[in-house]
Length: 253
Picture 1 (cartoon, helix red, strand yellow):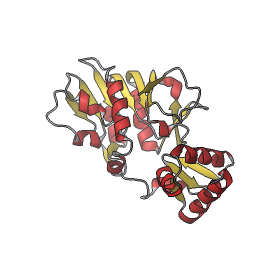
Picture 2 (cartoon, rainbow, N blue to C red):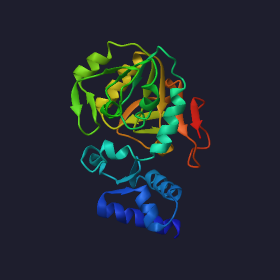
Picture 3 (cartoon, rainbow, N blue to C red):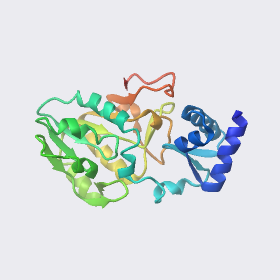
């Protein structure tokens, strides 16, 4: 199938459904996900679509991100889980016994608890998915309360922000909705998560970003922070990576 034919197919699907998913389209057309992502990137440059994590939206359909069509967090745990686990294992090597660390919301951070719960450290988190994986931990666990965000399975709001400001962290491990390497910006899905990330980073000696390669060049709707503010950005190796990455990227096999 020619590039123009693929793009027409993608646009027709978006006209019909409003959203498309890279993995689904790749299966339908029996071509690589890399090819689909490249087509979507070109369509976005033509301002005909909006790329999001794992797929794309029809131009003007950005509100869908805040509706129920987005995958539940428990379902997203299974997306690229092996990649997330390898990234988390590598990032966990930075943590020293006795340290106090912050683990952010989202599924990219969750596998860190599998290793760190067995160590003499203090872990502060508002991520309910992390709490669900705990089994008789050696680590001291401090859970941040507040308003429960069912969509993202975490605590947020003024109470959570106030509690989080009480702590000083040796290291904060942060997730995000997307990263644009060209503008060096990271994005969140909405404002509630953004404020908690900013507070944790302000109170941390060192901050790290954990992403998988599919989040590169995916734009969210809330600008978060420049990626230069992270000591290191952990990401898996992939043929889809930009040719030039900032010096603070750590690529995980």
